[in-house]
Image (cartoon, rainbow, N blue to C red; front, top):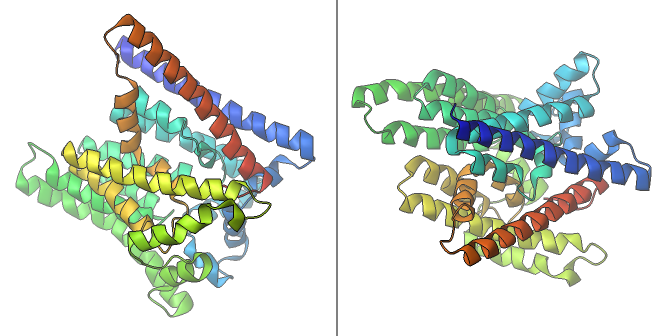
Length: 365
């Protein structure tokens, strides 16, 4: 590694430590001010579903909307006598570090640091699928870029056990294989079958659900019944989401309309990032972001798009390009550095706010 690489790696490590410390500080504040335990802070929203599946399997028909990878990990930790919530959260910190490491190798320190500084980064520090999926998917991407397709396929298979986004990862990796320059056509044809491994993981879950429910569309049905996620046109989903941004719609819950406004912003950022990748002819990255955002914005209403932003690593590459520009004149550079500093302060405030919402059980999407 060059000296610049060492400096970049150091910056990523510092950013990882700082964001973990900030969120731990928020958790400590919640514990001292409300008397709840750390386990109670972490056991919010989807975590309850994962714990139920880990302990009892898919007893609740709606729980089949959640892939088995994370519950299996929790069950394994519980079998070792470890507290499932706390130990999974500890592993989430490791996974987030691995994901940032992969991003540093893919796009440099700016990409990795900005990913860690995403306002919704609390979801990389709690027992959710995001840190584990990102670690597996980003390393699969990195291995694919270096043409190590057996390793990429194994990592993509792990990602596919965690969430439906693995299907989009397979599509993007397939485009990567086809689009890789200086690779002979026959080599590309030999590389493509590796992607049958992650396809097999998804197929195995579909078969399991069919045996469990008798339906080949059980996962989609659970999404619709539990979270009103049914296919629609993006403009219809936007029309359904806009009323939810009104404060009058959510009396005594002021955070919810703000969160839905962020959902709309996240969708817009997804489309802009896909367009940027398209203009740069980054075909695989364009596929990865475009398929994600099109599916999420064609899903009845905009929900959980904020968390999905963590998967769209090209967005953080685009932000890195914008923020790393250096104006020529000294005065403009000083003003630009001041603006970047203010943006960082505001971002840290958003991270703390998002972590506080999650830790107190408020709406944090």
